[in-house]
Length: 150
Image (cartoon, rainbow, N blue to C red; front, side, top):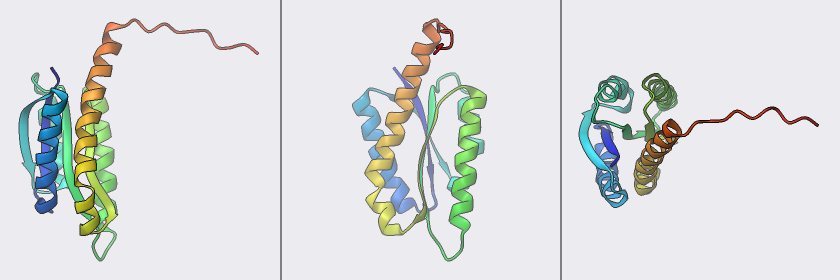
């Protein structure tokens, strides 16, 4: 069974709370177990929690859930870019999947609401698939083939 930790942003919680509920339903549908649910003040604050959860033995993958809504400045773009980069870095560093279920940037509140199901389900599904594929890769000896000669 795949063991997941979920991190949900409290910023725009009217959106991210619904994402959390959909994510829990989809995890159960896929037969994954949720071992932790943590709240971060905002999406930008997730990396420290992600790192702590990746260090736990009963976590196969971390799922991030949040909504970065466009404001009057380009602040949303900066947040989204740095969150995505740090999530990827932590995933590679700890050799465990971290899925990006944070919607935005450049998104209105209405667009965030419309994307609740899609982002929540995709984030869970991505984490579950990556754990299963990583386990398969760990069990299969990868053979290197010589380069094709034309």
